[in-house]
Length: 71
Image (cartoon, rainbow, N blue to C red; front, side, top):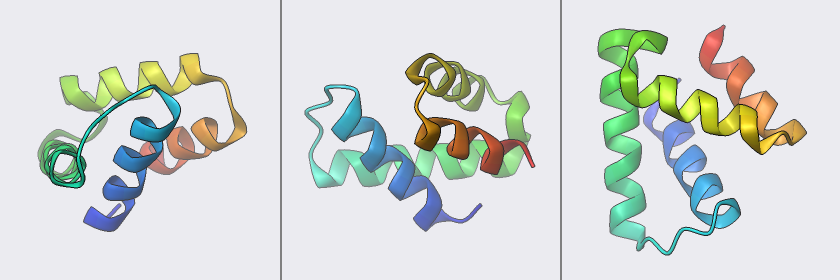
């Protein structure tokens, strides 16, 4: 996954989970997700937490994000 994917994920999270983050904060979160994912993959605590929240979300879109991150 590239930065744009993680930016889209951060935007999805903000819009669907009651976030009130600014564009700058969303971009910062996307950067953190990307760097952690690149360094540790799904073993990253940040990514593990995101995967858990996505699973709890339960939507098809959330499960699509899970599939993309765990391929």
